[in-house]
Amino acid sequence: MRAVKQRSNTFISKIDFMRKNPFLYLLMAPAFILTIIFKYVPMYGAVIAFKDFSPSKGIFGSEWVGLKHFTKFLTSPNFEVIFMNTLKLSAYGLLLGFPVPILLALMLNQLRKAGVKKRIQLVLYAPNFISVVVVVGMLFVFLSPVGPINKILTLITGHPISFMSDPDYFRTLYILSGIWQGAGWSSIIYVAALAGVDPELHNAATIDGANLLQRIKHIDLPTIKPVMAIVFILAAGGIMAIGFEKAYLMQTAMNVPTSEIIPTYVYKIGLQAGNYAYSSAVGLFNSVINVVLLILVNIVVKKLNEGEGLY
Image 1 (tube, helix red, strand yellow):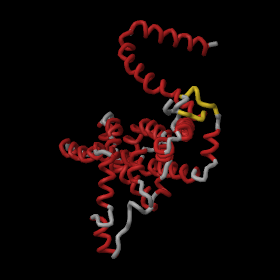
Image 2 (cartoon, helix red, strand yellow; image 1 turned 180 degrees about the vertical axis):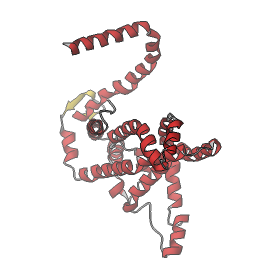
Image 3 (cartoon, rainbow, N blue to C red; image 1 turned 135 degrees about the horizontal axis):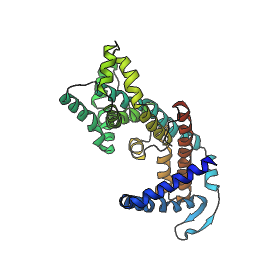
Image 4 (spheres, helix red, strand yellow; image 1 turned 90 degrees about the vertical axis):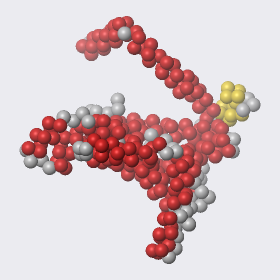
């Protein structure tokens, strides 16, 4: 009974707040309307994943086939390879790339000279503004059989390495180039969180004899722990939503065994082959996996993080 009264009081207080501050909600209205139009309205198109879609008949005129396309994908010989390629590329990228922005933020936080700190931040943030096309082009130039990297390797080992065509190097190059491009920019949120740490805490810890690592462990890390939890949940929830552009640009005829992932497969089947219904089913399957992972990871993190999670 008490819980019902508390909910009722909360609802009344919210209505009262809305009545007193209507202009705040008017400010939110454009973003809300745009979200509805461009995010929710197009979701009706997902129904073609359950139909034998024909452009001439339209979405609602096409024959309903239920889970036929999902079954076809799950039983296809390519499913295991494509699914595992996507999962491995995303999981390795998360595990290797998640700690790097945190380490960068902790190191930047130790710099006391503002001028030096700004210059280093500029160097770290700059790769984020480089186009993915340019980054992949740089990889092909530097790692080509006649590129500078292979020239050095040839002098040392006597033969070049086909980095961009060897399937064994695809994941390593994809992940390392992604860390180089995005780690500096991703560290901004942690740098901002560390800016809120009271310097007196560090001064007091130093007087008590704490060294640098101890101050980081007991002051800095607890400060950014909630931010780390939220960022990790969002990253883990989107573990299957790996970027299409970079994987497709790095893909060659030789490295397809490791570079073929769900987004590139959807592009080839849907836009190139014109099988829209089947590609929609594959894309919807991928989205459902992401939602399930988001919920599961949030539950686990809340249990490990004293009830603090994304929601």
